[in-house]
Length: 598
Image (cartoon, rainbow, N blue to C red; front, side, top):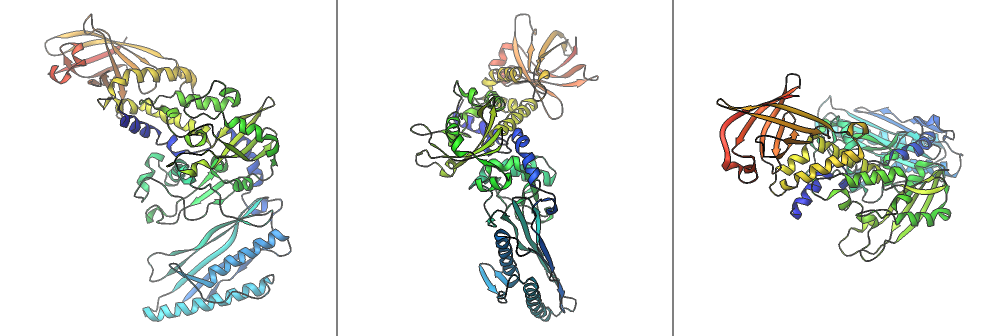
């Protein structure tokens, strides 16, 4: 098969899975750390056992032509160094929002920053209330005079309030809008969420690893699909993007009680009518793509076991497969991870590329001129049987490789029978699961089969492909229902006829893959001929029957409650002629075939 065909086919079948390095971390990460996350997070700040005490202020007011709705929440004073640092940073955020105006890249202070005692909350808030009111009154009066419309008015709304708090972190969100009578749409203001580590009060700004947007494309696609209530395949129809690549939101992600929330502004990636797309990715899905700082923040309490487990992690990393797995790999992985990898390797893609031949693991484990060089940065034990490690690949690579892929990686370890085994790396376990699910969908819809049949170079691979799909289902079952993998044989008999004659015919097919209907076998158009033929089901439910060379023989559709098949057959002089020039030998006369299940 031509190289370009292999590449195109591989790209088409991996588009929802392996090319994205996606989508989620494995389900057992969910079972082992979700309980920890749910314990340390809360649906309201009141649930935190060590919540910061805060005070709220209403800075709202009215002027001749404007209304102000301003609310600010700050930690109270004298709660320790961390709380004082968070309070001080929030006051700076408030000052930046209320006292500074931006025009493009230019910033202009409209009144001086407060210089009094910042611990005197009343004096602090009185100052900003009056100064902001004066500034808005002046601007709104000037606009009123300019427009000369007695009904002209301006609304200014902004808040800085706590949205989530756990024992480990606290989040304040800065958001609002400005709307005037002459504006078609309100203008969004505010800088979005600010997350603080409660241990020392510093602001956490980097949640995702550098360039992780390339690896989490299917996570973003899945979240947007939920927002738009469409399938992930149809998300692009909802977006106003020149290319299929989905950028990260400009606003910093926000930790919530359920996971990491992504918020796109109106018009940022979609049309105005779409509003502001927002979705939350569960922590167990996003952790492999988060910075070590963010993971520590989300996990809360953990035990640093870098010294104890560093050597073991080094050893395990050398058994991460690239284009194949060594004979000893299974002894270094949990059964779940090993099964996920081997099943993904075994799933045929029709182009003899498969997931093991792609480069989705290349940047982690490969070395151009030798073995990979791993550096274990830290190992965090989350409970007696589970740990997470952060590992750098410091291999020297040849020129032209994007070095951002060779940085920090995420390893999950699980203790089994007293031995630490690798249970996941960079979220690959469920990436494999997603890949296999997508491949099963393409098998069962006939999508790959139809693709192969549509190309003269790939048709000759159809028999081998069909046999490999059948072998895959026999080995790995029918998805979540392994018992459904047992092949079912059906035999049909009937007559092939036109106005002047008829022929006896018998057909048998094996249904080993739902939807594909396995391999159909035409047995006796004449006593001494045997012709393998294949079927694929189209979206309208019809069965399209092809020769192994990709020539369509006839179309069948269920009738009489599905007990018989009927359709049109373009007749040939001899079955062997189908292997040569079917266009030349095909009869112009329609024949009919009706088959009744025996």
